[in-house]
Every structure is written in structure tokens, then in C-alpha cells.
Amino acid sequence: MFDIGFFELLIIMSIAVVVIGPTNLPKLARSLGKGWAEFQSTFEDLKSDVMSEAEGVKQNVGYEELEQDVVAATKIDVDVNLDLAATSEIDPEKPDS
Image 1 (cartoon, rainbow, N blue to C red):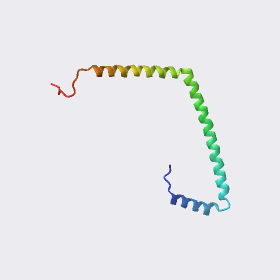
Image 2 (cartoon, rainbow, N blue to C red):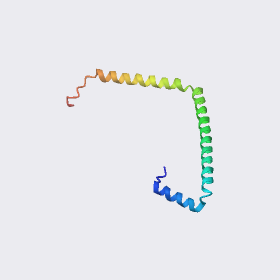
Image 3 (cartoon, rainbow, N blue to C red):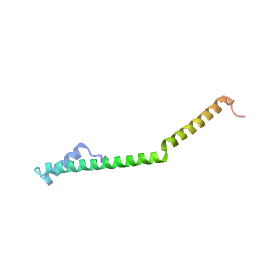
Image 4 (spheres, rainbow, N blue to C red):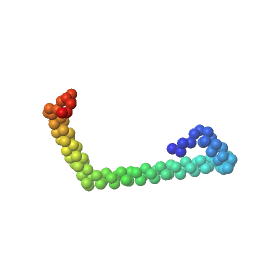
């Protein structure tokens, strides 16, 4: 993500120990962990709300029926093209005159 290697992380941690202090570092790590967990929980709630709203919109619009119509139309188009290619009298070995 940030392209930080092991040695860069080690340097950052050693600077954090010097600046913050070894006694306050566990408290800071615990606070960061709780904040990250709260962020993830909020994000998951937001994600589930958006997904449920999107599902409601799909049902209101009739997404499944539209999707089936598009698939059926595409299948008919492909079948017609394959039938035309199969009945074609063009010989790929002969050069055009």
C-alpha cells in the first residue's frame, strides 16, 4: 500500500519509541487499535446500508427481468451470427480476385 519495507518500519518504530516513550507506546497502540476497529465497524455498517439500498433499487426497477431480456437478445444475436458463418460459402484458402 505505502511500499514500506521491514527496515523502514523498524526505523519508524524506533523513532516512535524515542518520541512517545516506551511507557506511552502501548497506550497509543491500544487507542489506535480501538479507533481502527471503530472505523471498520462504521465502514461495514455503511457498506451494508448501501448494499441494501442498491438491492431495493434493483427490485423496484426490475433489474432481473432487464438482465434476462439482455441475455436473451444477446444469445439470439450470437446464434444468428454463428448460423450465418456456418452457412457461408466463403473459402478462406482462396485469395480474393
